[in-house]
Image 1 (cartoon, rainbow, N blue to C red):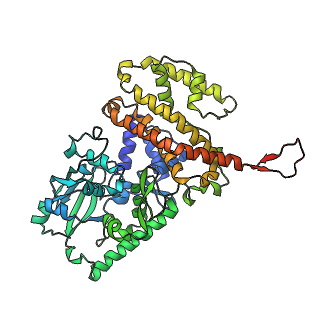
Image 2 (cartoon, rainbow, N blue to C red):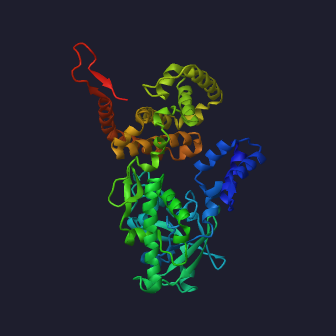
Image 3 (cartoon, one colour):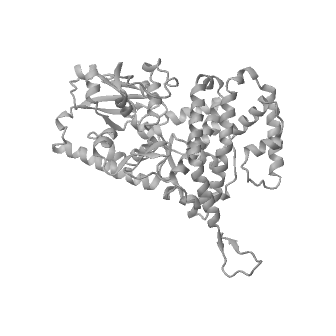
Length: 496
C-alpha cells in the first residue's frame, strides 16, 4: 500500500469503534482507490493485530473491543510512599501495546493527572513490566524518558540497582480523593488511539484480606480469570506474546472479567494463580500451565492435519525485505554472481519447480539494477556490517527452518524448546531485515542490533547440535530393515 493509503487504513483500525463486515472494509478500500478481493481483505483482517473476529461475519477493532471496559490497578506500598503510580504493563491488554507506558495519559473527574518520576529498585521496576516478559522489561524501562541518560549497551543490557520511572502523580488521588494504602484505581480507556484513560479511586483497603461480599467477588474474579486462561491455552496455545494471550482472554470473557469489583492481573499472578505461571518459551516468556514447558506444537496449530494438509505442501517464500537486503549486499560488494545468490537465499536441498529458477533470476537481476542505480555507498556504509552478520546467520537458520517445515507435523516429536528458539530466531532475523530499510533508526541502534545478532548466534549454536540429532533420528526412522531380503537386493525401504 502507498503511505497515504496505509495511514488511512491504520487510522480506521485505530479509531473505529463499531462492528463492521468484510463488505464494509472492501468498500472502504475502494473509496481509497484500492482494489481488493474479499479473500484478500479477509486475510488482511484476520492477520491484523488490531482486529477481532465476531460471529456472523462481523469484526471489531481493538479500539472498539476495549474502549470503555473496566480494569483496575492497586498501587504498591513503594509507589504510595513516593506518590508515583507506574503504569508499566498493568494496563495490558486494554491499551495499545506499541505505545510506551510513560506516554499514557490519565484523567480523574475530567482533569488530567500530572506525571511524576520516582526511583525504584531494579527488581520492583521489572515487576511493574512483568507482562512484557522479563526478557523485554529492561528495554521498556530504559526507554522511559526518565532514563534517557542510561546507556544499556555500555551496561551490556544490565539495569543498575535503581532506576527512574515515569508514572502518574498520586498526590491528587491521595489529597483530593482520599486514597489510602490498599485502595485501588478503577480504570477505563476512553481514547484507545491516544492512550487516554479515566480513573476513579475505589476504597478497597478495608477488603485487604478479601472479607465480606466484595472480597468474595474478588475471589470469583480470580477464579474466572484462571479458568479463562486455562481454556485459552488449549484453544490458542502460547500465542505470539503474553499481551495477545490476555487480549483474547479479556475480549472473549468481558462480562466475567470487566466489572466494578474486578481484581488485577498483577495481583492474580503474584498471589492467586494456582495453575498458571510465567514459563519460559524459548528465549521469551509466556503465561502457561504452571511448572510445564511451553511446547512448540499442540492442538492449536494442528489444524492443517484436520484438512488433510501437510506443511511440506507450502512453497518456500522469501519476504521482499530479505531479497532486498541480499541484493543490496551484492551491490555493496560489486558482486553480480546471481547463481551464487540463489544458493545463499534458498535452502541447500531446495528443488526449483519448472521455470521457477529462470523466473526468479530475471526478477532479481531487474531488482539488482534498480538498487544499484539508487545505491548510496556513504549512507549505507554504517549498516553494512549489520547486514552482513544478519544475512550470514539467516543463511544458516533458514536451512533448518526449511528442513523441519518439510518434515511437517512429524516434527511434533522434536525437542520443543529448541524448535521454539529456532522459530524465534527466524522471526527476529526477518524483523532485522525490515529494520535495515530505515537507515537513521539503524544508525542510532547499531551497537544494540549487533549485540542482538551476536546473542542470536549464541542461541543458534546452543540448539544446532540438538536439532541435527533430531533431524538425523527422523531420517533414520524413515527407513526400516526388510528381514529376509535376498542377497544383493535393496534391504531397506523408505516409509511414507
